[in-house]
Length: 150
Image (cartoon, rainbow, N blue to C red; front, side, top):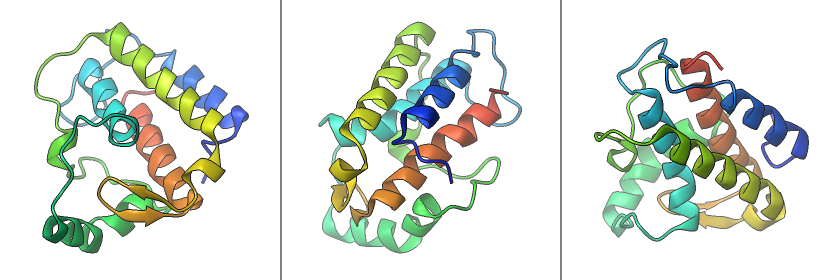
């Protein structure tokens, strides 16, 4: 798995994002390009913003049991995989605004570095290693950039 915390991979991912346009179409799934960018921003909102309610203890236990390994391992997501309700974007979003937000989140994450994330508690999965954070961030971005041909 590529390391999103390195400048080289961050630059590569941002270059892929910059190939997208408001006219980009998905190879699969139901999201528009604007919704996909907003969807990718949710992963960072869960880290940097306090806008999504945290799951209660029981729900967190269930999420860790059912979804954690699928999200943090190195195995790519399948096309059309289910997503958490917090990641469902049902309204239409502004392409440029979501694109800029996503790039800013990626840069901030790379600048904070893997040591910032090592053993940091996630919103839903409890404490994660720097490798688990990397896998979660990178494979989610890679999955959706592939979805839109980037």
